[in-house]
Image (cartoon, rainbow, N blue to C red; front, top):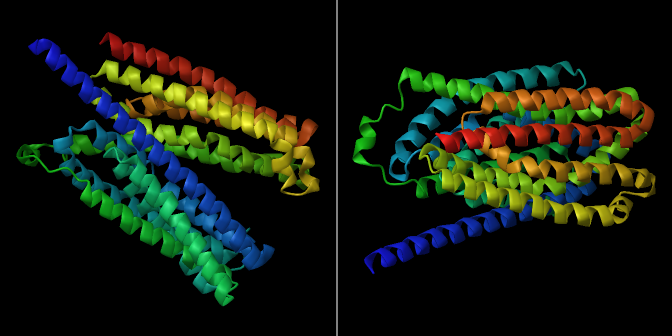
Amino acid sequence: MSRLHTFTELMKIRRSRFILSIMDFAQSLAARGGGALFAFAANIALARLLGAKAFGTYITLLSAALAVGGLAAYGTGPLLTKEISAQPVAERSLIVKQLGLWSIKRTGLLSVIGMAAVTCWLLTGIAAPKSDWYEIVATLVMLPVSMILTLAVSVLSGLSKVALGQTSSNTIKNALLLLGAGLLILIGVRSAAAALWLQVFATTFSVCIAGFWVYKNMPVAAVRDILMPHNDAMTKLAWQRSAKHFFAVSASLLVLSRLDVVVVGAFTDQAQVGLFGAAARIAQFAGLTGILLIAWLQPRISNHFALCRHDGLIENMKIGLAGSVGMTTIMVAAGWFSAPWLISLMGTSFVPAIWPLRCLLCSYLAWSFCVPYYAFLSMTGHEKRLAKLLWIQSIATLALTAPLSHYFGALGAAIAWFTGTALATLWMVRMGVAALAAHGSE
């Protein structure tokens, strides 16, 4: 009877943890989805307020700050998630403090270098919008603030508080942007500088909220934490290597997502660039679930891997695969059938973008199969192999984009995206299955 009672209690605990995990994912999805809607509404409001020219200046400066801020983070975000979640709960306080201090020192220097580079770019005016000094200052302030928010959200993910991280970085920040845009409309302020400083305020407020949640959710440190050698030279060297590989991963994704339009423009006309850009922006919504699942899976996979819980790894991989493929299929189906209506919202000149949109949606469906394997490889010491794969995907996709867009325009570029994504997915799934099997045999 005692064994049966113990087994029953263990099953209750396991079921309770599973329910809490599902609730955390549901809350994360609601936070991310709500934030996306707020951001969409805020961009429409700011576009109507500023007009095409001022909005173009605002979006260019903001994109530059966010891109350089992401590079300045140098892969530290995923490293924080991986290392924090790998520790037992009672031992996470010290690693948060030590790794957090190491990360701030490292990224602080890189952000200063990034700010200097952005300043030179804006002052020289090479391919840069004409900007006043208060617009330049807002852009420079936005760079480190956005980077710090990324680090804070990564710490929350490492503490298995993904929903709180999504709420602070998406829902709260974008809700403030929408409210601020409404205020600017009421008082009649129509300048890119005001919109940039609104971004700075919303992001800074989100940093404060995220920092408060990190403080509130920090586990009580164990006495023996004081003796743990987390801060030795070998550990720092391992952190540096891992961060370098994570940086290579993020850089490859940045190259693919930013240079695709440039390549299309080099081999076709601006009308085809506009069609491909419109289709790509709409299709991104199909990848929302997969991106969120990666953030949700990473701390759990890292923890199970560190504690050698192979059954837990398999369970999370199954949940991730079913959730990613199932929910992405629904999104892709909805986008496929509503493609004519979605494109019509952008005007009659965008009607030829319907089939490029459908092709890009299919690429997200193919990508959904590799979501759990991406999370597994990134959290189990395979960052270098993952970075190599993603760089090959980026180079191959851009190489295919050149001839296909030349002959088939936006549709050719979309076909190149689908081909590169499908091949990379097959490779990543094969790599992930082999690594998972090797872990199970240990």
